[in-house]
Image (cartoon, one colour):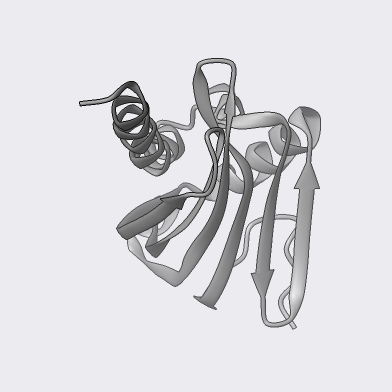
Length: 146
């Protein structure tokens, strides 16, 4: 196995782990852990019903997740697919079923994430995480439902 093949395998494993770690942090209300999964200038964008919520940078991400985790979202992701687009970049998507812990784990919604990943130092991070909500029965603070 060449060094390039080994680097690609290690990158794939680290990228595959990002959405899993994200969900684990959400379940544990670990805001610092979530924010640390993003590049310093990383963005989370949520799109629902034509409305877009966008937060970029560590402080904005922290504020967003403090409000969003108050409702106790419990994500279940599936079908993570991605491709390496360069030595330090990748893009992919995964699909989401969402339950709400503050309401007896009732179904909250569904959608999918479109992610751009970037290697920062030795670690892979989210550069951009776009959540496309196909259905949301309740929205976290900061979202607009029209």
